[in-house]
Image (tube, rainbow, N blue to C red; front, side, top):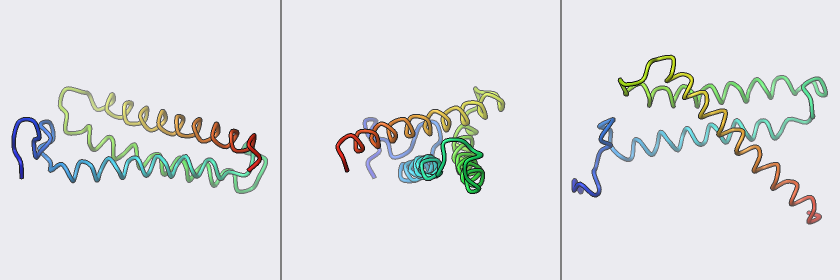
Length: 117
């Protein structure tokens, strides 16, 4: 393992191996993407339009909560942030991530519709 100052083998804040950090972050990204995909599958424009809409929205919130929990666990190691702020930051990251992915997906779907696919 290369332990030079340019390429450290461990993160300086968490002291965890680099592969474990990337695995956790990939899992968080996957959960945020799964939450967005669940919202995209929803067959209606408003929650009362389909009997499956509420269950899909609840599933999306549950998946997003899992991602927020993983982010909170990564932030838990930091002692300079209060518990409340760690929770708010974790939830905020998930909400912004889902919104950004949803906005990009909707633009892509609109672009495909205009192209006639």
